[in-house]
Length: 550
Figure 1: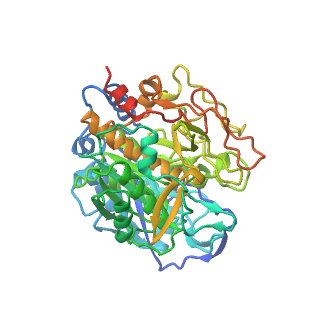
Figure 2: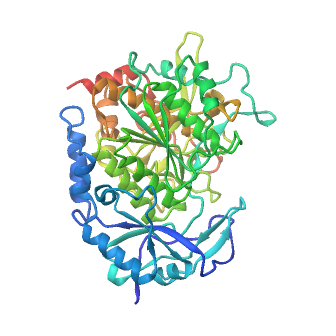
Figure 3: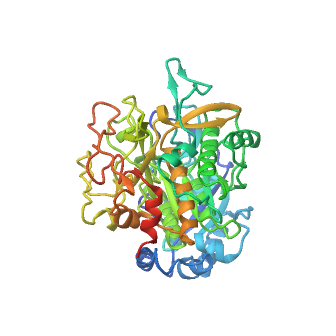
C-alpha cells in the first residue's frame, strides 16, 4: 500500500555525524504515534479556550480539569481502535509500560499510543530505510533520511510518529564557572550567589514559600544524590524539599558521578527551585534525550493526576533546525494543553548566543523555549553595588557563551507580542519571516555571577539559562500561593499587566547576544528585546500585587 509523505517529518544527519550502516532488520524499535484531535482537528476551539483562560486568569478561573480536557480535546476511542488495527496489519505490538498503563481518559488526553516492532516492520510501514549514525561525540543513534510516509488508510488519524530517530535531541542549558585553568571542581571562595540571595535581590514576595504547589522538573539524563541535597539545603538553613521521581521510559534517577555532566543540570534545577520555594513539592520526570522522550515527559507532567503539577520547568533544549517540524508541533501542542489546565511552563532560552551553538554562524532560537505556549527564559549578568543596588546587563561572555534569543523560524508571532509598546524585530536571517520572539523574561545566568550548587559531592557555581527556568518556576510557586490559585499561562499577563506595572520588572538596556563577533546579535534596549525579553524581576512583591489588582 502506497504511503503519503508526512510533511515536516524530514530528518538529515547531525552536524559532523556519519552513517555507519543499516539497522539490522530484526532489531526492535519502539516509537510513539501521536493521534489527531478528532473533536478539534484544527485547534480552533482550543485556541479560543486559551484566549478565554488568559482573559479570566486573574479573576474567575476558567481552567479545565484533566478529565474535562480529555473529553473535549482528546483523541477519539475509534481512532485508538484504528491504530490497533494498523499495528496488527504491520506487525507491531501495543506497548503497555508503566506510563501508558492508564485509564482511557488520560491516554485520550495526550493522544499517543506506544508501539514496538522490528526494523523491517518500521521500514515497511513508514517507507524509510533505518540507518545507524555516529555523531561527533561518538554517540550512535538510529535515523532515516527524508520524510516518513504514512499508509493512506491511516493518514487521517496519524498526526506524527516520534522515536524512529533516536538521536540526542537536547542539551542542558548550563555553564559551569570557568577559571584560568578551565572548569573548576570546587567553588571559589565568595563566588556566586545562593538561590535565596538571588530571590532576595529580586525581592520575591515575603511570607510565601510555594506551599500547596508542585513543580515538575523535566530531565533527560543524569540524576541526583540525596546526601548532596541534604548537605546543600541544611547549609541554607532549609529542610530538604519533598521530592519524588517519575521514570518516563528511562532509567530514572541515575547519577553518573560526573559533576559537570547531566547531573549538574538535575541538581541545579532541584536546588534552585527548592531553595526559592522550599515548601513546594518537586517531581522530577526522567525521560530519554530524544524527541519522543521530550513529548512523553511533557505529557507525563501535564496529565499527571497523581502529582498534579502546577508549574513545569525545562532546562534542556536544542536549536529549532535540529528538530523536525512535526516534533516541535507535537510538543508545543502538549504545552498548549498545559495552558488550559492552569499549568505554567518555563524553558531555558539557550546558552550560546544568537547562533544557539550551531556551527553555521546563522541565527537560531532554542526549542521548546520558542513554543508560543512556553515562557522563554533568557539570561543576564547581575552585579551588586556597595550601596546594595543591582546592575544587570545581557549575559555575553563573548566566547560562545551567552544568552540565547532571537526570532523563531517556525512559530508565528503570538498575540501577546503584538500589543502596544512591543516591537519584535526582523530576524537576522533574511530568509526568516516574522516570528515569535525569544525570550519572554530573563534572570541571573552568567556563571561569573551564578548559583552556588552541590553536585556529586562537589560545591560548584553554575550559570546558564538553565538556572533561570527553575528560578522563575520557584517565583511562580510563590505567586500561585499568594493568589490562592494557579496563574497558568503567564505570557499575556507578562506583556500586559506585569510589564505595565512600574517597578515590577527591570528593563535590561545594556548588551547583546552576539557571542561570535560575526553575526551582530540582538541588542538590548527599551522595552522588550530578543536577548533579555521584558527583563528580570525587579520586585517580585510588585508582580504579585499587579496580579491581585483588578
